[in-house]
Image 1 (cartoon, rainbow, N blue to C red):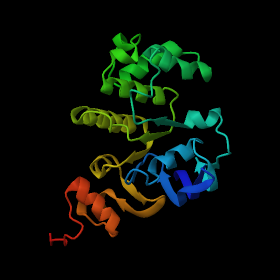
Image 2: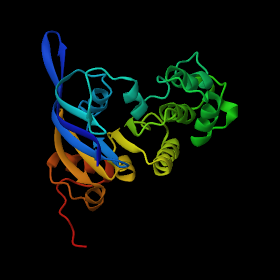
Image 3: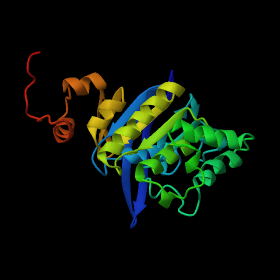
Length: 257
């Protein structure tokens, strides 16, 4: 069953009286429990897809179904119980004057949960942070710790889908691996569905079963993890991305196994 079904999604912005088509008839489906990647250069439209799902980008036409239910123009409480997003920059995504406790408690209060104390404690444990972090401020945390708090905030309402917008690109390489392994473990334990945006095909090859390649707001092609590992890209643009991130030359001929 597809938990996320997007058909002919278009997003158009108006700037200086000119219309800019950020997405042009993008279609893809994500199965329940799957990790699905979206890759492309800056400006390809990959992050706009996530913003459109969340209602943060102006959808001109097309449809978005979550759990086979079409989304209205505005996102209601039920949507945010099902879908949460983790943003790219852990330094910008947390309020500097709010403690970790406030960050995690606020969505529980908004959605009227009764067991806030237990949920906050469990959320910190689940992302590898202990109770010592509960009353710290963002400036008292490292980049990796901040992103763990952002993941805990996204998971605290127990959503089914996480939208991950370059969740490790602002982190050091060693910390990136820790956060990716954390996300892998949480998905396995909770049966979560991920939509992961990245410019790095090596990250997507590690995390995702399938990947959609985008350029200039268009879908170039869709590949499986096995396609990536076997270098079975068919489009020149995808081969160029492989060359940049996986050391694969676009003009290289496949060698017999």
